[in-house]
Amino acid sequence: MRVDDVLTTHTEGLAPLNRPIMIVALTGWFDASSAATAALEWLLRDRVAPVVASIDSDPFYDFTQERPEVWFDDDEVRNIRWPTNDFRLSRYLGGSHDLVVLSGVEPHVRWSTYCDCISSLALRLSCDVVVTIGASADAVPHSRVPPVVGSSTNDELVRRLGLSRPQYQGITGVVGVLQERLEKLGIPAISLRVGVPHYLGNAQHPKSSAALLRHLEHVLGVPTGHVELAGEIERWRSLHDEAVAEDPQASSYVRMLEHQFDQRSEAMLTTGDDLAAELEAFLRGLENPDQG
Image 1: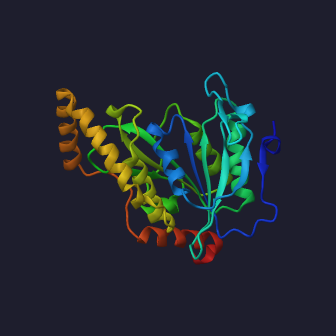
Image 2: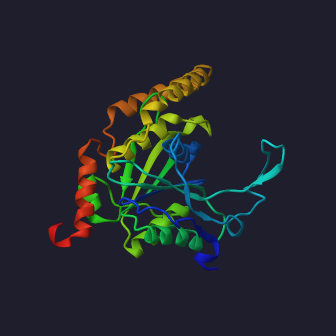
Image 3: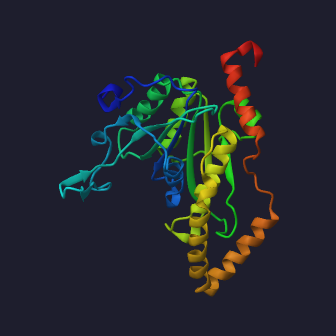
């Protein structure tokens, strides 16, 4: 199966992009409580974000696991909603970059072809960098802002943005395969991961989504709307507080996590407005190697 068989682009007549950066989040292995995909959905909320490319769902899913949904439109016509992998374009007037955003569904099969679709589009659209974001269950208390850690295999990005180099070995998801594919193609890539309190199960945790968006804003220098999540954060904080308070053992455990969290020095991604400047300096070095 070839990329052109499953990747459809909608770029005819599209005005030139402004130094685009691709951001990818996929449901599944690397998206605890849907914190990463929810972050990208919030990023595009209330923005004009046309679809510039789509990956056909049919070859990539076991539909006994990722079942399609039935829905009725305004005319009461019955439709089927399939898993979607749409790349949306968000432009920022006066900003440093346009964003190409994929909030998709981790496939069950043909991972190599799926990752080829993403990397191929990044090359076609001349994306400066690909940023993957994810979330994993962690021993963090819901009452604290969860740390975000970042990594890259690019030594210059590691140095400029205070990232780490990947050290993990073991089973992985599609994001891990994609990162390896991007590295081999020479496409600069950054991986951001946020922790989600493991004791909350699959409950939503917008505080983790907001943490991802805040770091994206620092790195990319574009508004993400993370401050507008304050209402959702407070609502879910109250629900989590109530659930924990009903269980004395859970209350004791959370207090222990809070104590540990406050005492240790987290190896988290550096924050601050200088991050965007450092990314721009890195990208200028790619365009003008003699001046890097």
